[in-house]
Length: 230
Ligand SMILES: [Zn+2]
Ligand SMILES: [Zn+2]
Image 1: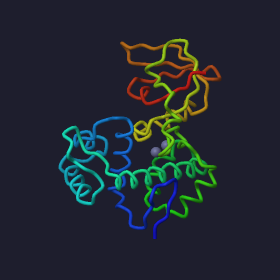
Image 2: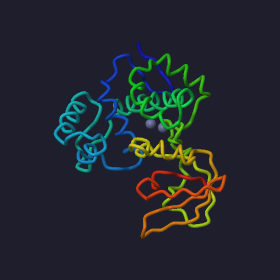
Image 3: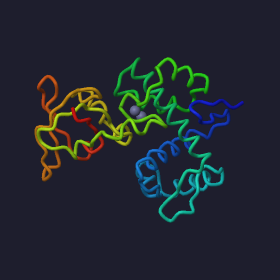
């Protein structure tokens, strides 16, 4: 049986969870114009380079990626459809978990759930959540990439800039401790903030939030947090 949501084919015979994890990472890197190379994948997936090589071979054999380009691998049309499907299931699961258990816990739990969300549940979630364009952390659902286009990384802002926090990039969602820290400090999508200090030599950005509280964030994470000029 084949179902169709947002133009992407969602088939009953899905890739394994491991392959789906690779596919969503491919989609993020490809969207961000980052090279898809073995060393980077090994680092981001926290596995050994030989494991990555084996998996990439399997994916190429299954027609999900091509490895002809010396600059890195690329998703085929089949791979792209599968990647968009798992990414959307991940983000819809995040909304469900965020609503029930909390914003900072939603990424990790959705990462487990995304693989078992049926096409029927996916369609029901899209309707129930009123067709969301981003995940709870502000990352675009496949097809809505233009929504985040004008949001600026904190590291590219200047002292005095006033913003609305909009997005915590997927790679920061995945970094241990980042989402709980941001939730505790109330650095959340929709919150107004003023940039009070940018210290390149110290690699820190300091924000003043709505209730006057100050939060200092290192460039390593700050470059993955985006604001919209207020
Ligand atoms: Zn996530
Ligand atoms: Zn998210």
